[in-house]
Image 1 (cartoon, chains in turn yellow, blue):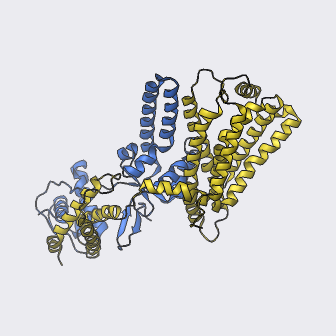
Image 2 (cartoon, rainbow over the protein chains, first blue to last red):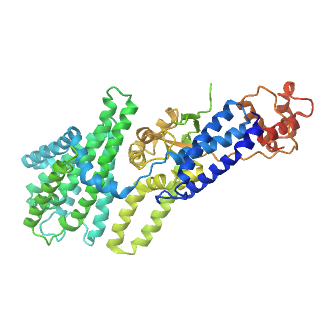
Image 3 (cartoon, each protein chain N blue to C red):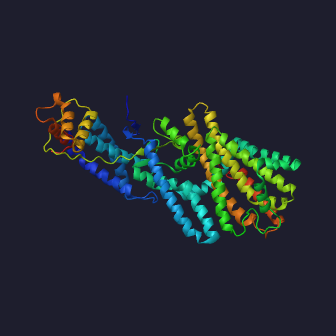
Length: 329
Length: 225
């Protein structure tokens, strides 16, 4: 068939298809329905397959390059509209946090356990070391930093955890969001370097935590410090552990890809690990809230803070251990 | 040896989609524009919220955090895979199979920027792009995404000659594209250069001025009579 005949026969269909494409492309991704009527969807699908066929014909018959390119453009745009995946957030969001996230944490329990050990064992080790040899704290941090911590957790303070006087809780909330979630993201992302980055972040934070805890206990500031930490620590420490576990999973996928190529193994691991990070974001947001408005307050008694903290720990551990168990597993 | 790295993806319908991955230079350019925008927004917001005391500074920190990590995610997922910088540079983020990028993939590629940034200023990311066939950085590799040039629909070239001629038989698609490209660029070439190039095809062209002949053939390819 000559090209002119080909074009005369099918130009009408290409025109209609281009019209559908235009309507679909102008609709925003946020709306569920965009631009097309109900029956038009079937028509669009039919026309898409036809246009792919005409494109293949035109290439095979060596028609003019200009025509082939035009049809190729329709095919590319049609492909992107046809195979577009819509993320509908509301129900997926709820289902994820109620059931999927705890299930995921339990499924990755080996990485989570390793991350827990990497965070808490150095902390415990340095805590005991500093209790035994108080000057060891200066191996981890400078004199100014130690004095800073002492100023933050002095039992005589109105507010704990912050050295500046005139700051309000909202500022600290914003600060904890920006700082802690950023650290969690870096802990996760640096796991790409064969897991080493995550190991470094976990161990370093554990050592720092242990050193500060040990030092403040020796100078007698343990009441403000532990009551401060226990409140939001249930969310924050657990979230850091999970972020580290996600990073370790990335690194391990490169070290031991099994029967897949390293790239395929990495992609598979990344797809799972990023879901852990969604949970981490939520937990750290809650932690920031508790840390800014509850933990740091000087007006809540230490006993209340301890009991509140214990309750939160029980809740978090119960959520991770039992969440999503009914039915799915 | 192919210098052009066009990526051909076969769709379920059996078509070959031709995607043109974008290299590090243009991606750096797009990133620079995005960086400028983010900096400008940060400065403006900090001035406005600086007046609102503790609540304002808290809000500012949260907004700064969101801007830092999620600015690309928003645009990639809900604005057709194009941040303002990429739009200006004519680029787009796609999934590895040519479909629009998903939320998870966008999150992965943007959180892994922290690794691409190491040791300083995205050196790891640029090195990875240089060594990969499809110019993917570490985040792209893990998330299975591509940054490609957006192919605008081809405009028919404007040529000076009127009338059309049939093309010689046996010309492949590549050759036809060469003819079209010549016809498009005649405006930028001096007449001597045009004649010099057109003479290369002398043996296979019908008698007459080669430059005009090729332009008329371009008309024929485009379908202009």
